[in-house]
Every structure is written in C-alpha cells, then in structure tokens.
Length: 313
Image (spheres, helix red, strand yellow):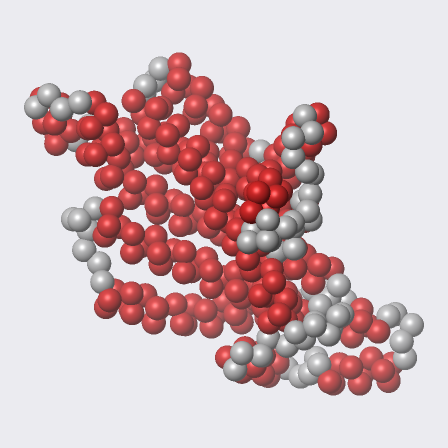
C-alpha cells in the first residue's frame, strides 16, 4: 500500500503543475485590467503602467506563472490587492468553513443516499423503488440555488426553525454552528445523495444476484445479515468511487451555497476575488481546492482495500 500511495503522489505532481498553469492562465483571460480595477477608471496612464509593472502584468504569461509558482512553493501566496491582507491568512480562516460544509454535505449524502439505495434495491420495481428513484431524479435535476431558496423559505421564513444565513466557528459554539450549517449542508448534500442513491441501488442489485448471496440464503442466514455483512460491503466500492468523483461537483456547489448563505469559505472567496479582479486570493483558493479534490480521490482509492480484501493496491 505504501508503494501505491507513493506512486499516486508522484502522479499528482505533473497533474498539479498542469492544473496550476491552467488556473493561472484562465484568470488572466478575464475581461478588464486588474490595475485599472484597483486604481479606478479615472487613474492616470502613468499610475496604471506603474502598477502593472509592479504586479508584473506586463510580462509574458509564462514568466508571470513561473514567478507565481516559485512564490507558492516557498509558502508565499501573496497579498490581496484590495485589502493588502496576506492570502495565507485568508486561507487559514476560510478553509475550515469549506471543510465543515463539505464534511456535513458528504454525511448528508451518505445518510440519505445509501439507505434509500438499499431499500430501492430490495424492493426492485416495487412502488417504493419507483418513489425513491423519482425523488433521486428530482434531486439531480434541481440546481443548488433552487434547493437553497426552498430550504430558506421553509425552515427560515415559514417555520422559523433555522437562521437564514451567517457563520459561527464550530469550536466556538458547536450548537449554533451546526444550526447555521444545516441548510447549506442540505443544499449541497441532497443532489449528491441522489447520485449516491442511484449508484447504491444499481450496485446492490448486481451484488444480490451473485452466487455467494444465494448460497448464504440457502444456508438460512437472516436477510439483514446477508444484506449488511455480505452484500453491502462489496456494493460500496463503486459507491465510494462515485463519491470521490462527485467531490469536484460538491466544490462547485459550495461556491453557490457559500454565497447564498453568507459563509466565509473558499467558494465565496473565489467569487469575491473574481468580481474585484483580486487574482492572488482566487488563484490560491482554486489551487487549494484542486489539491483537496485530488487528495479526496486518493483517499477513495485507498479505501477500496479496506472495503474489499480481494482488492490489492
């Protein structure tokens, strides 16, 4: 397993270099001049030229990228052009917010999707299977902002059970933090739970048709033992794969969700930086997000060996 992890980490290095160059280059293609956005449209040409030179915006893209990459490797993420705040400090304050949202969203998706998928597989082609499958299609079809609006209308406006927006660090006040994170976690987690449900259903149906399941039934084992001890463990491998692949979609959902619910996370940091032409925080936040997605997929690959002893990595 150690050799496998090392190979995967070595494979991630060129991938990170390619992705980091894409991130850096695409931001430079955004319309508008960052120097003009910072100084204002009425700034003199001399001041704009001076700022462009100081920010190295007058250099070729590859020169700018290599300088930026060198700073990143040395731990220098730069400063925000708007607030002059260190980007590293901004990351340290915002990563826990996005990490908490992502963790709760994955818990929601697994808690809702896996049991629903098992029930649908056990009641294949029955009315319960039809209801669950229809609900999963609706969950996949609804965009994040629409789910968020519905949740705010129900739990904040109509029922008054939950605050509509805001954030409190978990270790400062766990109860208030969880109350504020329930609706954002549901907004991101419900669409993911629909995908998990469909994959769990299909995988369980395939596993339940295997010979060793019929052998277990012939031996007189209880249905619950067959489902949870024999079938589910093998059926979870493709489910884990889907969850790992959906991490990127989850990150995209967090951008919308953090903006809707006023969460000071990486997603909101990216949106604000793009609108303000503040490239350093955007580049750093996107790079950290990509690293997180790649590590999540690595963790999913490693988990195969623990779910199924037949898998050798």
